[in-house]
Image 1 (cartoon, rainbow, N blue to C red):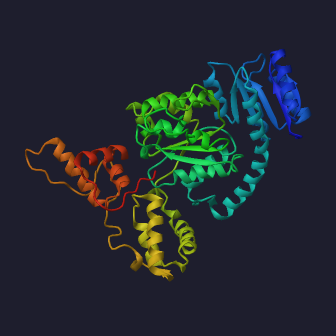
Image 2 (cartoon, rainbow, N blue to C red):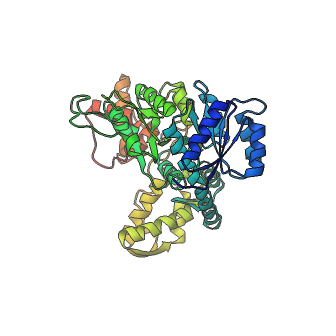
Length: 467
């Protein structure tokens, strides 16, 4: 490897300092050293490194204090922290302050080399991000995300801030708000953009198979394991893994996931060997994560490990001012997808779109525009191209009002029968959209599927299961 990247190594133990400097310089980096944070600041001023590798526990000025001072300089340093066993909390604190990544002592040379290689690409990413920021200022578009409202600008600011780093991000929001688009944008604006992006929906995988899907398995690991299979972590090596609907993951699997995240190593089912992995993990949920932790659906330690940063996507009803721009962008996409030449959305239809509450959020708007484009073929979209039931269907209920459709119950109806009627009536009112029905009923998609299996009921129609 040949590189002119400058790496400053900050470590108070001389033996470790010399060893790290020799190791890193052997990979082609230019290195300098410092014994504590104060000495590091002098080196920064005199030598201007691009990457700083620092221990956390040091005399005079520790790694956290050094990171604070580097942040004040506002020169886009890439900071990698070294932490002893049992000090993960401090490393997570450092990453919340802007550190790129952390590595536990004793240092694994392979992992350090990988992190340095990724970090050295981050400065190019920062320059590309500046071009993206200019486009965002001009058009209100960030990657596949569209919107100039205050709520969307707040989300964009967080995405820009954390995309170049290696931190875990928890993306929250109702179904259809664009959580996977956020994850893809984080990937595309990161140094990992040329590597795989893998998304797995934890709610859509049977509980008996989820560990195999995520961690992989060896041949013969369980009945039906006819050959070795790579899991999602291996498929996403050097890239980004999105664990969608993380709250639906079995608690036992969550414990194994936490261990992988902390140790950066995984073991396939049926294997005795551990494999180092380099994957950025993002997670998404349409639940309130604090409530999921309180109810025991989500492990608290996993939540705190994933929630280094939280990006919340607002429901469309809270930023309706973005609907005109969203509709125009979707119209352009659908013209290309369906080979149409629709000119735009007329004023009357736009007014109808603005008046609706969009319980299915941006995904529902996209489906509505796509249907209208297919019907229109050319000219302008008008209310004539909207579904006959548009604006009359299910709306997202508030906690105070509850679902808009009622279910009649006779005296003597059992609780189980009342529940069955409510579930089936809600499915009917959503045209069998199970994701929307689960949200209205305030249950998980997996629970809804289990209930329908009990009833022996699976009405024909739409079965939207995306998060």
